[in-house]
Structure formats: structure tokens, C-alpha cells
Length: 65
Image (cartoon, rainbow, N blue to C red):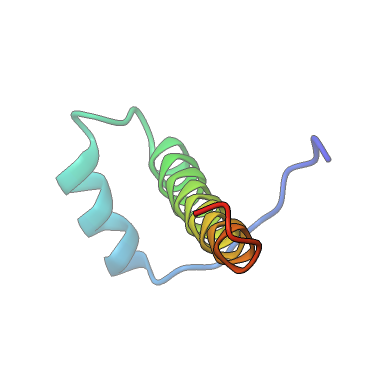
């Protein structure tokens, strides 16, 4: 899973992102990697919250809460 993939994006979109985020991120690739990692982390956090609700509902049904 350490391979590199090529993604095609509109040039104007890439240029706008580079201008806006070049100070914080060294390259467009670093920015996109950080953005995708953040989105994936948010999805896992949502799953954890959903799992927490399921656990709480089960505990309530069993009379523990």
C-alpha cells in the first residue's frame, strides 16, 4: 500500500489551492494528503460515535443505564 497514484485535477483548482495553502503546506501533494487524512479521520470519529450510541442503547435495554 505504499504505492503512489496519479490523480487528474483541473489546473485552475490546483493553482488556487497552491496559492492559498502554500505557506502551510510545502506542495499540493502535501496539502491533498493532509486533507484526505483529515476527512478519513472524521469518518472514523463518526463511526466511533455511532458505535457508542449502539452500546448505550444496549446498556439501556439491559437496565444498566
